[in-house]
Image (tube, rainbow, N blue to C red; front, side):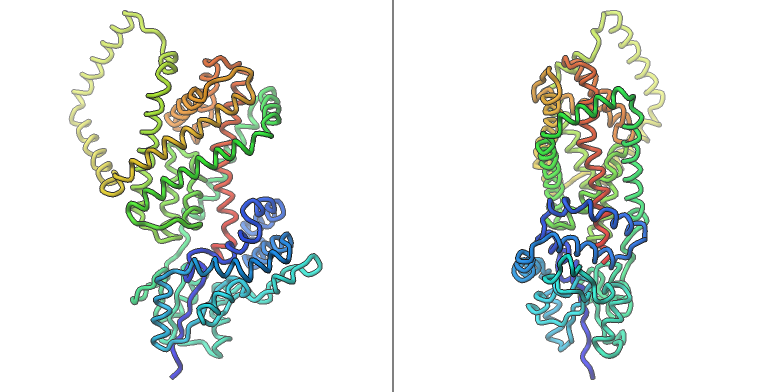
Length: 518
């Protein structure tokens, strides 16, 4: 009797990350990949529009990156750095299951969509057979010899074809035990009598659809929100547009500093996210976790930031995180944001708030008192309805409020919130320092940033668009800055922060595809 077959997917199953992505980052680094983006963007758009297959997209992507990397560096990455990196990403539970199969005398194999040269050192380390996407030797790639795949992309039905070819026959469901984590493993898992979808437990777990309607809709929603911001830009008067272009030209030399501050702010947000999730022992620091978290910002311009809840579904589907704790984390983040903003406003902006309110004459005080009494009497008449509404609100709060370990984690999360909100406020202060002859203090910059952001949030318009810019302009005017300078500063601050993040998060979903749809 032939031994049973244990077929393991590699990316996201045996290892935590993606071997191809890991290799690309080692070859060029994140900034190098960004530098190559103009060459890749047309192909990414074609791929997203189904005009380019995933295999062809992978071929183009690897060719562009390999051509841009010197041969000696390629050799060092493929022979030294990548094997070490992949070994460090091996899942302990996967290794235990692999060892169990060996003890049963099963024939163990890696069946992966990744190029075989990337995975071969890992397969040799594990002493396991390898079936992957065959390709040209990456070390031999040159302008005269572009990178090419020598077989079909080993995903979906192709995994079964390659497995049958390697074994000489298709194993029966009773003799095939398969492990996978994505839609590219669906056919392999469905052909197995003992499938393990995102699981290494002894009990089988069948494949489930991994990409929900919400995830397919996210890039469209992100583009819609971004389009709203772009449309607002083009609807500005020509005089304002000219002022913006002139201001942006003066700003170019400072862009690295501004984006460094923005990056620091979002690193703080991610640290807060991980601190809250760590308190309930969900996930770990990883590229997949960070990417899923960041892609939630594609919809951050929705009223009340409710669009960020999309990451709950995305991380549930992609990484198996439970939905309810992620919702609790979202609530905890909003509470920390609100508390941090209130603390900053209470500390640094009482004078600014006082200036915004008109002085109250004695007669006005009487009118306010009368209005208050009318409201109280009206409320008492509606007491039953109010009590019912309050009970409903309390029930909703009771279900999602942070408690236990997560409640304790809210204190460091609040400290991080105070830090990154201040850092983002410094971006506004820096813009004033660069573009205006009249200066403001860093604390004024933070105060104006938070007050205008609060006004935008209350407005419930997408991203606070229009209201936020108007509030920023008025507050800068109140600080002594000319309106012809204040308006470009207000608009540029929004373009360089929320709309940059919205665009980057939406673009990351576009770029992610060649990896997730292996």
